[in-house]
Length: 350
Image 1 (cartoon, rainbow, N blue to C red):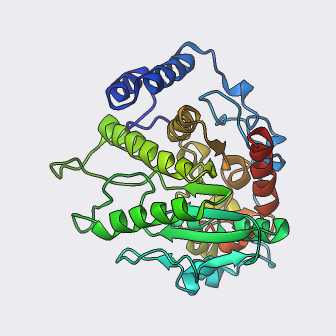
Image 2: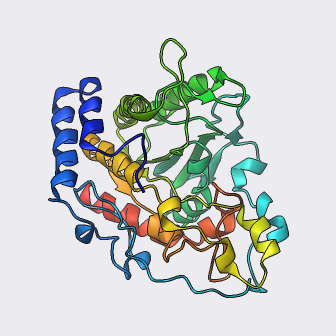
């Protein structure tokens, strides 16, 4: 799947003026490697069929996951033991939604005291930072924090990209000032508390504008994101934390809970083609920036989409609560994989 916003050597050249000199060379070299074939899907540790159970920490190289390297998804009826139940899946939110620790679009500032989880008296702090796609990871991160004896601080806001760029709302045609205020305050808080680890994530489905208020598309949108996420990562690194970026999760073509309710005898009817669910160009974009910034990178694509087409149900777990967000129940099941990936990164970068 080729995203018109990103991906080609022409795009890489368009990005160069917006980036620092050393980073310009790194981005261009990586893009050239893709074009001339010096980096191939076969070199990726997540390209093989056995990879879904492994920690997806990728070594240098802009190619992240191969679209075709998945076993075939087998059709079956919806399990009678499916969790969460289909009728309640749309409300299977992570804990911070219910206790007021996830900031909604109308604004608010981060709560450093009331939004602590894990081992409150832990000697190390891990921060989960980003938008609602970052919050989807909360169940997995909380279980990891409890097992490791870490304090967890959850800092997320709906529709607020972690990149330091304007958050534009197409439905209202407005820029979210609360997002910019929340992001700045949150980064300041992270710099103050100096956590050991920051796990950051954000959706690729953001919209933004330039200084004149014009909505950005194509390469201009990507350039804005790259520059903005650079600024954000630089502030996160200034806290002394090991920063690890979690790539955006695959999306569904349908609303899985409602689709499954209509197709109780065929989970395959609600599956999503890999080329639609997994945006390879955006994965490469995220990976390139983390390599240039020398921060960690975790690609969960094969955890969420281990077969082709991407299933709506894995085992007896309903993967999605809507087309873009995972159920809290499913994400909790990824905790061990996430912990292994984080541990591998911390071993490599003590």
